Length: 258
Length: 229
Image (cartoon, rainbow over all chains, first blue to last red; front, side, top):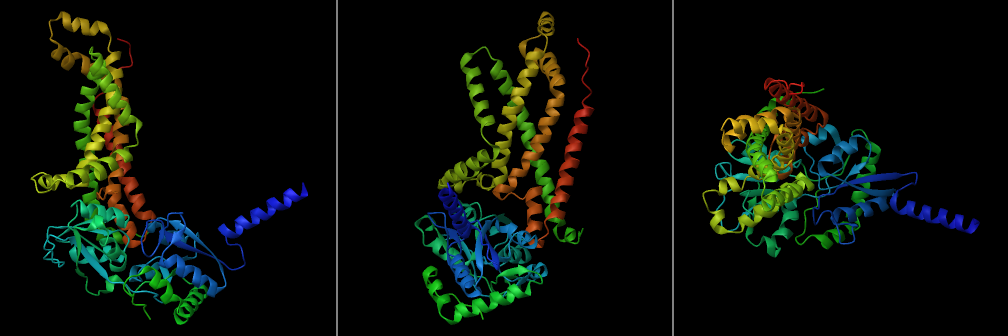
């Protein structure tokens, strides 16, 4: 009887150690459920995979914290952070002025340009005049959607999507004429045979609306955690782990922001 | 409560409310016609027609509306898009819009649900009234138009009001296929201002107002007599 009890308690503890962090220093990282390869997605076993989950586990080692990953809807990330369900968002979130009003960001850990994508056979100039009367698709709650609304909102129709897969599906079927997305994320998609009819239509020029690179978001005033994250990110970059992870997921080398 | 965003997004919100009302009117209108056909089909003497209508009605009522919208939009829509003839055709500007797929799904839904309601109403009209109408020499179409349908509608009016409010709330599913209806507009505000409660409360209030208008207009159709005829 006692043996069984001990075994049960052990297995419970073990399960707990895997699923829930319960050391003194536990940090919950939030990641969006919408697949966003190569940054974050679930592999065929249902486990998190991608640049950011790998980076998070390395950062956690440096922070000597016990970490857990929590998946949720992309537009629920910041609300969850503010209501203390999670402690850090590390999920390709650009540092924009709007977001900085409600959360604090670590130093940027990556920078990715925005790429216009459209039908390869069509001549499309991604300027407000060139896209007049066209339908532009973007993922909602992104710096891309803020940029498109600001510069293209007057002359073009904007469609907002919850995830990039739906966006690409509607671009393929011609329901939208062009989309704006993260170059690093969308380029591997363009290489797929399904998307053979799509092609890049140019990089969007740098703009304050795209933010100051991508950083990890923490609650306003959570300076201790932010400082720890900054140090851990710096350490990961200096010992070359960052480049190893990058090489695992990115074809072209990504500019690691300073 | 901070409503400073209201100015920046007022045009989106107004356009969204307009789209919601359009969806409501289009699907209620076409759906009602379909519902009459459905109800008559189910009451038809032809076994084949009656069973066919029952089958369609069961399928539509037995599957979630969201699934139907996805099937129409992502399934049928992308099949249509794969034919260059359709994709380059005159109808393509409509066929590429999520709006019409949602309108179609809602219309089918109204046809199936209200069809059942109408069928029960039609069956509840006392046989004697129909016989009296026939005795006056009215033809079948005239009986339907003058006696059968008006009497049935009178009896199911409260249920129809309820179904219409349900339809209003179902239009919110349009936002799932990138149609910027009222809820879609609120989602834009939510995502770009990072405010959660204010835009959602605003659209909730708008839906309530629209629902009240629907209930009020059904009241205007006259109250049902509770006396037995």
